[in-house]
Amino acid sequence: MRRYGLILVGVFALAQPAWAQLFGNSTELTRQIQALQQRVEAIDARLGKLESSMQQNEQLLGLLKEVETLKTEIAKLRGHAEVQVHQLDTLGKRQNDLYADLDQRVADLAKAAKPAPVAEAPPAAPDTAVPPAAAAGKSPQLDPLLESRSYEAALAQFREANYPAAIVGFNGFIKAYPDSALASNAQYWIGYSYYALKDYKTALAHQQKLLVLYPASNKVPDALLNIATSQLALDDTVSARKTLEDLVAKHPGTQAATLAARRLSTLK
Image 1 (cartoon, rainbow, N blue to C red):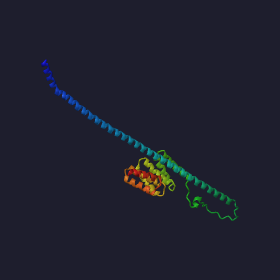
Image 2: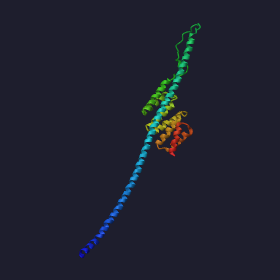
Image 3: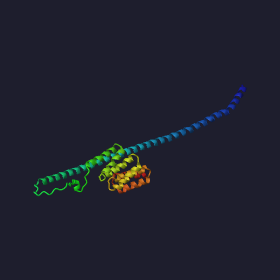
Image 4: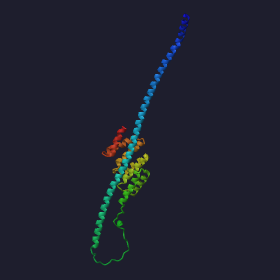
C-alpha cells in the first residue's frame, strides 16, 4: 500500500509541469482573445464613423444636386418672366402705334374730304414715286410681336433643357434683332446654356462678352455670378473670389449679390 502511494506521488510530481504549462497557455490564450476582441471593437468603431461620414457626404451631395436643380428652375422662371414683361411692353407699344396710325388715317380722310382748288394740270413727268418709308428717310421697322416670338421660341428650348437648340435660337435672335431690349438677355442665356452643358470656358467667354457689349444691362449681376460659378468649376478659386467681391461691391441689393455673399462665406 505504501508502495502504491509512492507511485502516485511520483506520477503527480511528473505531471505537475505539464499541468502548469496547460493552464499557463490557457491564460495566455485568453489574453490574446481579449486583445483581438479589443481590436475588433476598435475597427467596428472606425467603420461606424466612416459609415456616418459617408452618409453625411451623400446627404451633402444630394443637397448640392437639389441646389443645382433649383437654380435651373429659377433660371427658367426668370426667363419666362422676362418674356411676359417684354410681351406686355410690346403690346403697349403696339396699341400706341395703332392709335397713332388711326389718328393719321382720320387726318388723311379729313384732308381728302376738302375740295381741292382748280388748277392747270402740270405737264406729265416720269414716274419717280418713292416708297413712303424711303421718302421719310426711315428703314422699315421690324414687327415687335415677331421679335417677341423669336425670343420666346429660343427660351422654350432652354426651358426644355435643349441647350444646343437654345444657343442656336438666341444667336439667331441677336443677329436678327441686335438693337432689341432683349439682346443682352439672349446673350446671358447663351452663356448659361453653355454652363448647363458643362462647357465652362465657353460659358465664361460669352458672359464676359455680355459685360463688354451691354455694360448697362440689368443682366450684368447675373452674368457676373455665372462667371464666378464657371471659374469655380474650372478650379480658379482666386478669380472666382475676385468676381464675387466685385459683384457684391458694385451691385448691392441684387439677388445675385446676395448669392455671391453666401458663396464668399463658404470660400473663406
